[in-house]
Image (tube, rainbow, N blue to C red; front, side, top):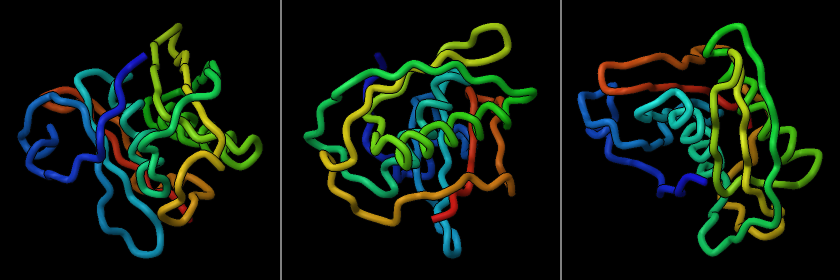
Length: 157
């Protein structure tokens, strides 16, 4: 499993801003919703960081331990669709099962993704912000960048 990284707040380190390929994520100001940006050396690392960025916007995971590992296969016709599908899966698990991911690992398989989510119960984490409800298709993107991959999504709260 990958390692969990603290929320990245240094805008100069993202590949889109000319920084290195170190993976990370950050929240950016957005009216009434939450906007996350993430980056990584690979598409899969970038996707994992997007999930962690979304979770960091509403929960403090420090000290939390995983209770289970959930495996899902996601498909999409484009990278943007895979990003939306992954974030939607996390929101579904949050709403229906009360689970929040602590760690994410993604692997490309036949045009889709195999994803492992190390999860814990929502009751095991401190809620620090509005819990997200849906992923917006407006300005959603996942694409290669000069130093790796970047993505961005707006999440309705």
